[in-house]
Image 1 (cartoon, one colour):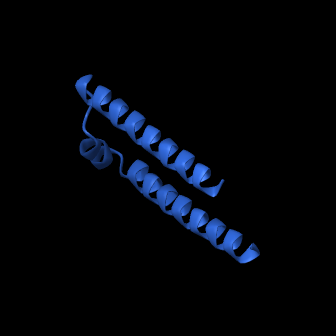
Image 2 (cartoon, one colour):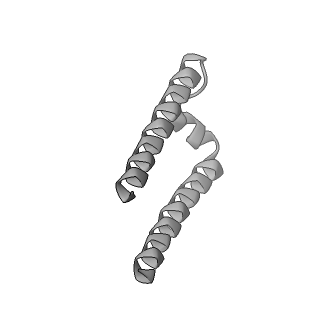
Image 3 (cartoon, helix red, strand yellow):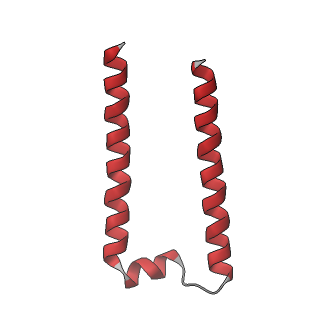
Length: 71
């Protein structure tokens, strides 16, 4: 059963990646500024994204560690 959860997690990650890529391509085709230009104009948005990304990774790793200890 564990393999099924791993497979579903991988499929979800792939789906989110494809959705993000397609939204990014549609955004750039619509004439919106590139992500680099946006980050240069709004540095706090880039910083907030970086902090949130780091927190998500750290919380996920801590959750994994707790689950392994409880077994």
